[in-house]
Structure formats: structure tokens, C-alpha cells
Length: 65
Image 1: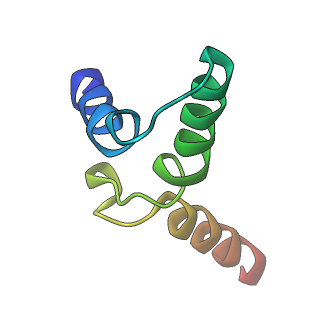
Image 2: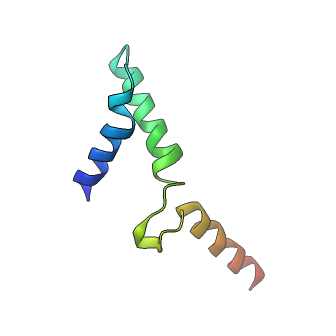
Image 3: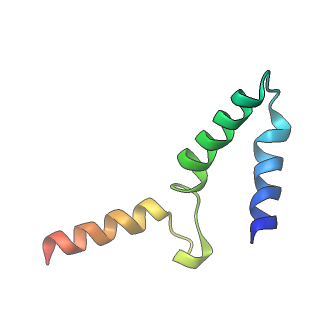
């Protein structure tokens, strides 16, 4: 699973960007992971739903119960 993640990160982000500093690269990778990969990317473990959709759907269910 980790190899798949790092391959995707390299192909979709790092190889397409030229970074002036190591700090800039680190910030960009963190922004990508937190802003896209962890929240909006569809996950097979969640039935190919987005994590945010699952999270907010569960919150709505709890509020209406």
C-alpha cells in the first residue's frame, strides 16, 4: 500500500514540479496529502467513496438520530 501511495505521489505531484528549496518541496507535498489525497480521493476501503463524504454522512446520521 505504501509503495502505491509513493508511486502516485511521485507521478502526480513531485515529478511535475520544480522546487527551489527542500522546504518548498516539503510544504507542497504536505499540502497535496492533506488537501487532496487524504480528503477527496476515492478510497477502495470506503466503497470508492470520498473520506469527506463518509465522514460528513456519518455526522448527518448521528445528528438526525
